[in-house]
Image (cartoon, rainbow, N blue to C red):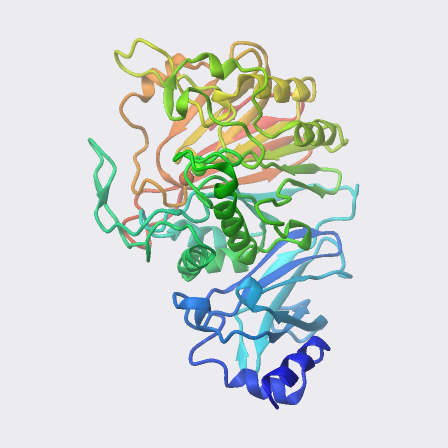
Length: 514
Ligand code: FE
Ligand code: CA
């Protein structure tokens, strides 16, 4: 059977005996080295994902450059005695031999197990829950919040722990799944906190599709991360480092011509898609991708997953931590763009008991002035640099009393109220800024200067500078968030503990901290 006949057989979407034999001969080593994942669950199914990469860091993951059929199974038990759906998908070289299968026809509100195989090789299995029927009465939802996983800064121990948390309906990843920078086995941090890298990125800064593919392959080789993916379905968005530090729309920090930066964004988004369990609706078209989307968990929670990178205008004040400049008040500035803003405002009135707004950068306009600094100082990459869009979004939340914003990016835990009028007006929602999995390495409960920041911003209620994740348990009456933290990420196998439990009563944007 020559190559053309082989591919012709695959195009017919039936696995012929010769193609299976051929597949068995493909691999020098285990092809499921990047694990499995599930995502974007619905009442009748979810996406299941894997990528064939027998040599993850080699070009094309060590795969030959032709399409390969992959068999998949979904069962109601972890032993796969009762398989309720199965089929085959083609892993194409165009998408790095990744496989995204949109499973449908399943029962709502129940767990399933899934796995893949090629020839004699079998993947590990993963599990995921379908969501409740639309509008159905739901008494409880449990979710995890994770992100900012700099591979060089620390071990992913937090992922090992979240994989063992019982009964999670899903994990939300707020972005910085990879960091694009070059491998640098030196030290990082400054002043009181210089640390050594625990491991090093392979390669230079990512620009090309192959660069980003290899970076994802390196990150996804981490077994703790794989365990967290296998433990439940994820809802994934991206932030800046999936492309480049603090890019805004088609503007980057080197002022690359936008039409050229678009090539880099397209490469980065393609690699993101190839390694993320999302639906075909999120296949990139060049430098564009449909990222923002919504999930409905019965009558209890509507989750709104935002995109604050693709459509934003450039940061004011030349980006960074900056004193006030007039650009912060630019009425034409955009964080999401008007279509997404309208989509969110409408979705917030969808009638669910709670609204979860799951997004990337801090919405609270924190003034970071410390010590004897004279001027207020803002992180203008966050919503603090975009006053007009933030005030519009807060206006759309006014009167609801059921909005909880889940955020990342800061590499620290910050819990506070979202108050209108630049933080000086009435609270309309609450925000949990959730710390990093690994980025910034070992932390500490607090750090110098934070007393000043807390005093300066009365809407802030809790601060912590350790690594970890958040767990949310939502019932009709309360939204309870536990901040789970580790003392070190430069040492393996550290235990996890609850730093604080924060309760939000339904109907009032208040934070009760225990
Ligand atoms: Fe980050
Ligand atoms: Ca970020």
